[in-house]
Structures are given as C-alpha cells and as structure tokens.
Length: 173
Image 1 (tube, rainbow, N blue to C red):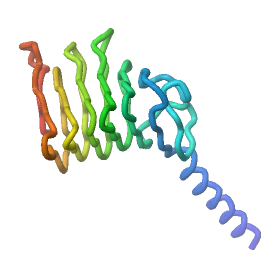
Image 2 (image 1 turned 30 degrees about the vertical axis):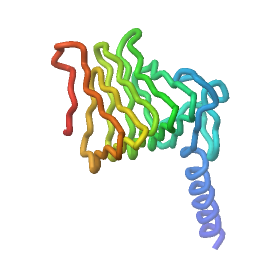
Image 3 (image 1 turned 90 degrees about the horizontal axis):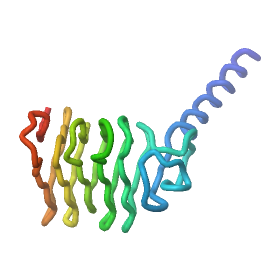
Image 4 (image 1 turned 30 degrees about the horizontal axis):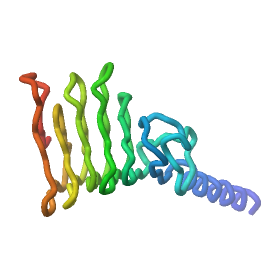
C-alpha cells in the first residue's frame, strides 16, 4: 500500500512539474532582441520558464509599438501573435537567423524576413495574416505540413527578395 501511495505522489508531482515548468506565456515588455532575458524584452505572463526566453512550447505575443529582432539562429515558440502595431524582424546582421513557429502564427502587425543569406521563417502549422497584418518575405518562408495559410481582408503578403539567390522562396512543403 505504501508503494502505491508513493508512486501516486511521485506521479502527481511529475505531472504538476511538467505542466508548470515547461510551458509559459510571454508577451513583450519593450523593443529588443529575441534572446534578451525577461524582463528586458519579455514579460512572463503565466507559467514558468528556466531561462526567461521563449522556447518551443511557449506562447508569445508581441504588443503594439514593440519591435523584436530575431538575432539568433534557432529562435522558436509554440504560438506567436504579433498585435497590430507590433513588429518582428528576422535580422540581416551577422550569420544565419531563423524563427520557427510550431503551431499558429497570427500576424496582425508586421513580420519581416530580412534579405541576407540563411534567413528564414519556418511555420509548421497555421499562418494567419490578419486584416492589419503584413508578412514581408525578403528571403525564405517555409511552411512544413501546413494546415492553413490565410490572408484576411486587407492583410498583405509581400514577396520581395531583392536577390536572385536560389535560397529565396515561398515554399509549401
């Protein structure tokens, strides 16, 4: 009987630990870089996070007037919402920079994929460009196993690579 109770307590602790430590909800606190630790760029709205930077299982919202620069390779989140007036730019400075969104990318502001080698946006599920949203692709936009690509109302997708490189594309893979 003691073993069963011990097992159940351990199981409950693991379930609680997994649900609170690994998934978080972030929103922008100010303009800054993707990899700036909270509270510089990010505010942790709910859940918990070890490093204060959005990860693969975290939901992210970019608020009005805030600009986030993806200045690293391997930036990733679960859901990403860019509010009207908010901006994400995948940087053109330095080496490769990329952003992966695992579930839903909702663009009501602006997302720009910078025109330099090895810049890309990888959307793994739904991409919705809202009525006030703009996706400005100057390099590479890939949707793997995408379920949904919508442009609503006056939302805009711009394909303006400014280069003849063969790594410039819009791909539904």
